[in-house]
Length: 73
Image 1 (cartoon, rainbow, N blue to C red):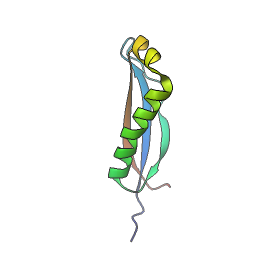
Image 2: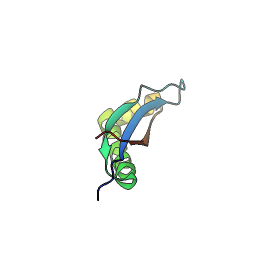
Image 3: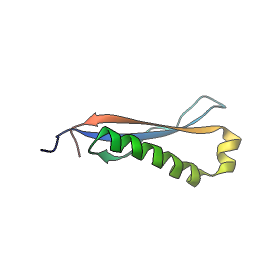
């Protein structure tokens, strides 16, 4: 039987230079914690590639992600 609880993946881009972060971005829902955490790892790489090496290096950007239990889907 499928659980009613899903996990929402949220990500944000932060800068070491000024210690700020952009608002969290809701990326999607996943059926298990494993799937959410794995998607966070993969989506971090995708987002880094989309932002680009120069912008990341120049602004000392990093990406954080987390998974939150949710009853929505």
